[in-house]
Amino acid sequence: MTVPAIILIGGGLAAVLFGLPAAHRLARPWDIAAALIFLFGVAAALVGTLLALVPGFFG
Figure (spheres, rainbow, N blue to C red):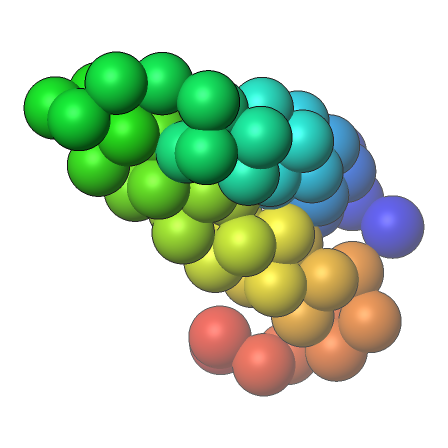
C-alpha cells in the first residue's frame, strides 16, 4: 500500500465522519458545504482504495 493511497483513504474517511453529521446539524447555507465535504470524502476514499488494491488502475 502506497503513502498517497493511505492519505486519500484517511482523509476521505475523516471528511465523511465530519461531513455527514455536520450536514444535518448546521444551518441552511452551511449544510450544503458539509454535504459537499461528505461527497468529496467518499470519492477520495474510493480513489484511495482503488490505488491501494488495484495498483495499475489509473496507469
